Length: 148
Image (cartoon, rainbow, N blue to C red; front, side, top):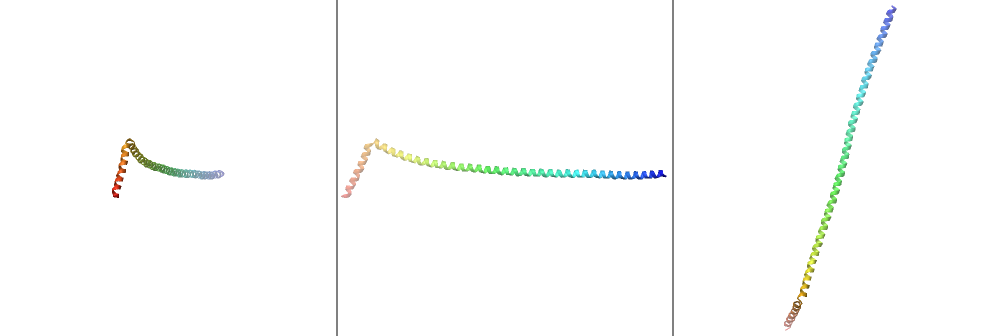
């Protein structure tokens, strides 16, 4: 009888140990599952964070690119404006030079005509003197006819 008590005690202790080990196995499995779930959540969280960081980096790169394009646009506008102003100034100067050249050309032609007249007078002094005398006589004759 004592043997049976001890066997039944042993079996109850064995069943309680089996229950404890079953419980501890379930707890271990639960712990492992929870750890795996935590790792999975952490992995997903890191994955979302990386995606978010990548999108943010792409957005910042796009903003930098837009700013660069804007700067290039204004540089081109400035360069074009300077070129246009330079062209306008060049055309104005060219027009002024042309007008001055025309004025000088007309003065040179006027001086050449006067020089030609002086040369004619110097080459043909008698004709010049005769023409002057002829005009003078003609005016005296006409005056005398008018007086009478």
